[in-house]
Image (cartoon, rainbow, N blue to C red; front, side, top):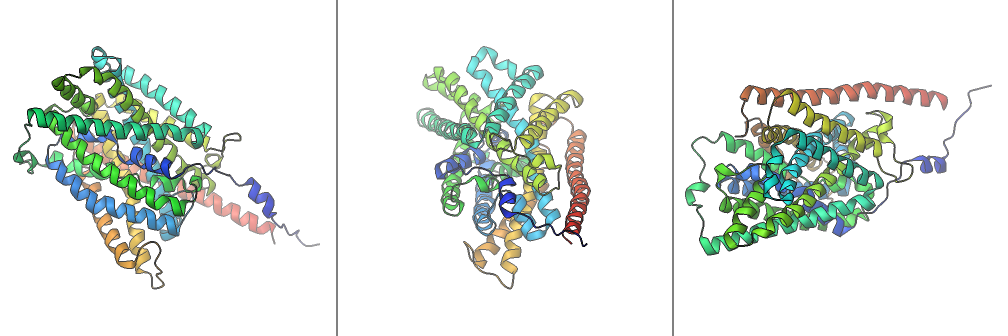
Length: 485
């Protein structure tokens, strides 16, 4: 008697596959893009380098942000589904490159989410009144407040995007209102009192090394249009909804970035800008000059909600990467599990939040760095890891355009080549310049050790997980094939 042939039951397989709910509409996506792309927390660290950063914003919007929008719309059209940058690199370059792209996208957010937590701490203390502003420099307070916010965001995202998206939406509205209010105050102060900004402030400084770092941070600040595609299976009619949302969210975010950077420079001398409290600092100075100092506390509260929304968007979005990798068996299988009641990747969310908190503790406990320096070190490493998936994303456009069997998707061959070349070269430059230290860094050796060591460590871990779990996946495939003979 031969081996029994096992015929998979398609209906059973369909019911057992993880099912995610489509709850994100166009309005949700536009607000998600605003809250994900327009991150006020990076503006002070950029504006601290002076007016020359306005030119860097303009260059990045043209050479990086526009190609990013083209790439997201084109690749989401060709390869729809959950995973975004992970799925796209996998389809074009193969399994390992897909995993590496997704891994870098996820692990960069392990660094970036803590910077959001620290920024939340720096801003939220102003809602308690000016007398409590010094709490932002307390490591103990920063850790406790970061932990509290992480717990809240994880719980809300586990309950589901149907609930968690409202934190993103509130954050998007709060970010937009805060940005518009900041710009409006800047215009009022400029018209009534003039400005100390001169043409000289927009020239390249004699020693440009601090400015070089800010270019990478600017490119990093402009990422986020791809975030919705990471949650592709949770978007309502993505092929119709996504392109318009990308265009509108991108335009709003770009305009807000340039406007708030200029306003910050109008309000506060670049030498006095605090990278954690710069936005509230600017509002405090300008509101005092026009006689509405009472606005500081409510503004800080609104901005705190905005920051919480940013944290929720990146925590919830990037956690989908290990979820998909768990389903592909390139990470532990339990990361691919969904919550039995809420249908969300709860294990991936908890792991992400736990590692983020550990990284904050390590930087405080073992490097002796202050809150501002810790923020800058985490941000710089996040820049490098975040931009690696964009090399794959822009490279994918070039590969697709070079195919002999090329068929237009959303865009023609010429547009894909132009966007791919511009984005790939700009991304490469942004990664290289992130290794130049920002002015908050006190030890060059410690910084470069952190940057090179951290980059190599995370890429090495990607190889470890891929090949270890890849062998297990291959073994399971062989075993499964043997049972069907």
